[in-house]
Length: 278
Image 1 (cartoon, helix red, strand yellow):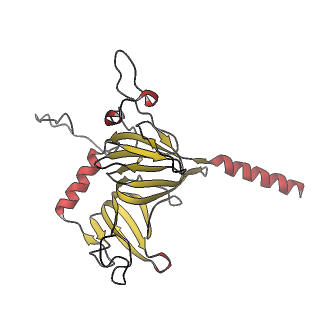
Image 2 (image 1 turned 135 degrees about the vertical axis):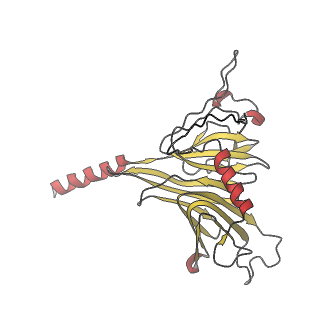
């Protein structure tokens, strides 16, 4: 019994040491945003801020916030001047808080929040099994629109985004999720449309499993190149238009925290114009 007790204590210690809390690092802000740690006390959000499980982020109108999710915080730097170096502690006014220097070195899990969005981090853990890293990420999209870039995850990992009437399961893919309140819609909440929100999914790569309806839920399987609109579509995904696909492709490349993976590079020495901004 004594040996069994010691073995159990050892196993528990190993389990506790192999699982650690992840972090959400704000790497870029355009406009205004704020955060709370779950106590309804709001603080101005600046690039370089690291948050954990329980945090809630809210963006203002016409604002954007890029968040990197991982097991350790990522490093961002503010532009420096001859008089004073910049950092999160002495950041400039909110309108210029987003000007940071950040170059991703590896593929990462990235969330871009658009204007009037509310996103909570419910769970963010990483476990080391000795063979692979197993991540467990649970977000809560309460309002607004987000663009996700989720790197390939192990078979035991999960990446979920809760919405008011369901949940979206995501595996190694990218696309947008949007939640719009329909308080002014006459048939919102009626039998013809049972939800109080409109849910839109536009998927670029990989797969998104959208489950709506609680216990009697219906799962919509949305693959890359397809989308779903809960208000206008049936229970199946439909192909995206070329314009929508072009928008998603552009979003995937202009998000400054997105890391493109190249298998090879060919130089043909042709003269070409490079946009200094994009």
